[in-house]
Length: 354
Image (cartoon, rainbow, N blue to C red; front, side, top):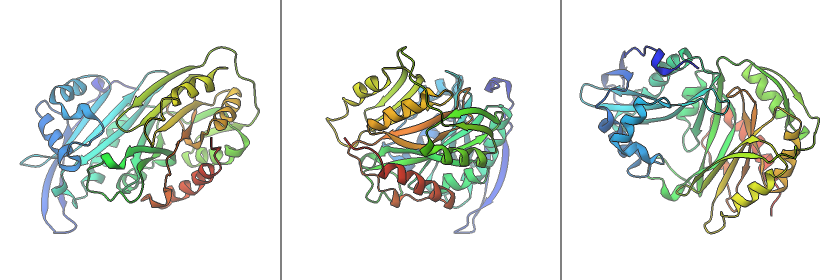
């Protein structure tokens, strides 16, 4: 991926009409400039009050540091009076990763109806592709379908879900929450530089799903279901725990003989409060991935999708939901994501319960 400091990000002026009122307004779409921090925070507070899960984004100093660093790019939509909305790119370049996640889009509620979400995506995705990552990757919320639609219009393909990401009781936005104790995210991917996945090793029960995903992504891939024994070396894991949302993200950097033992120890801390969830990202470049999959399934994990093109090694997702009932039927989804939901629902219903 090219460094963000190598790219010239031009400004773009757009004249838009409100689909509800007919009002005409001019917006300037541009990269972050020092002094935008207060306007960005105002957007967050207008939509989420104090409940936005990225706590650093309420702090002006931390926003300036992130804007100047190598791991984020910020964009804003500006009116003649104020910042109307914002978009965040997260840049992933460690442990073999090479992808950009357009991670958040947040608008002041009074600027809804102008089509800003689509216009900001159109503007920023052109710039993201100029940075030449292996892929673009999006977590699209499932309590509305706006992100799914605008990213789908850019060619992004649904490949799975991250389930139980946000506690409904802590959400203070303007969207209905239904009866889901936790809300989930849909995963969308667009390959940019990487077009060949090589050989991936997955169990027979998910091989059809994986093959279909790579076909929709228009990536070359050989799917193999030959099982191998685990290496006797210890597994290496990267673990991120969110105590507020009660989520654990585990990325398997190296599959090893003690993988499930390590995972079991991590999950042992999840019983004091309800609705903990855990997502595992599992590399599938070797036949030992199939053995690891089978062992994780015995621990109550189930398949939830594909993380394609984002790293040197192809990866799949597995999920543990503990005592959480998902209520996936309540998700607000596009037609394409609706098909994925039915497939993942099958794996969810067939999971091994402890």
